[in-house]
Image 1 (cartoon, rainbow, N blue to C red):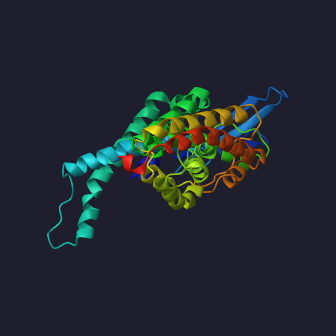
Image 2 (tube, rainbow, N blue to C red):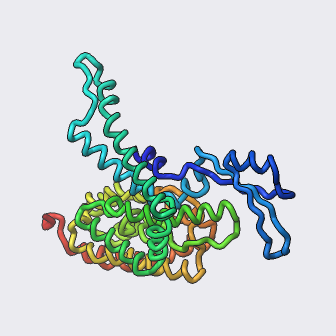
Image 3 (cartoon, rainbow, N blue to C red):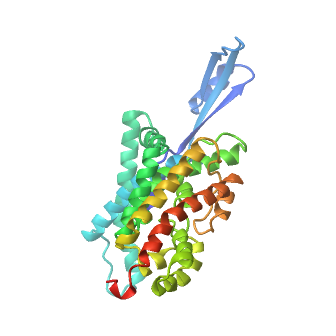
Length: 358
């Protein structure tokens, strides 16, 4: 549904301009004009010579280099959400094709989706056509210029980066998967920036990357071992904790923690609604993301230019993502800072007896 509606929202025409060695006149010009070609002669301001061009337009072409890249991500989310909402609404209203009782359920379900899906596609298609006619601009291009570019520009500010980090931590503390809840914001803004970096690096190796802070930057520098940098907490528990319950959880959680999976420690220790760990859980990522942000924006560490999966262990993930040896060094610095923040609270938790924990 999302892919189909996205395709309906795209321009499907391509114009090719060809430079001609000489002007076309007479019957040949008439034939080309009747076929839809546009002939023009303009003066080249650099040379002062007259240049003869022929522009031809054809239907059924997608702009794969533009609209199917990071530029089309916002539009895909918008039209996909609208089309999905229309589809669900019509399905709930039972505006479907009814099949006889003897028809297999799989066939019945396939036919039931025809009317809602067709209606959703037509709504998106008609809206796109009307928008283009009224504004002389494709909807996907307007979204990229009016919505996507300002958000991408704002995303590079320190305030936005810090705010997003704090919100993820606060959601997680109350048992809500912060990175999933805020995923639409993370992916729509910072993942789009990351894709543009990747495309730039692939097309022009060595070129300056357009964005310094991207989606993976959070994982590398603020969330080592998962939200809250809980891998650091586990190390602190092994070193300082005298509580058998915490050490038992740490032994079970350390292996997944190395691969940035921290649900065992979040809900097993737990950190969720654990007042003694609230401050370091929020403070450590905030301080770490601040250090990393200023290191990257001041050119001390290269920004992200390669796509890496989130469960690659620390140190390896930063080098693969940046191809810069200084990125793992920055992670080690952040690890040390996070250790200094987590350690006092782990030591303080030794005063709490397991039988006193509710």
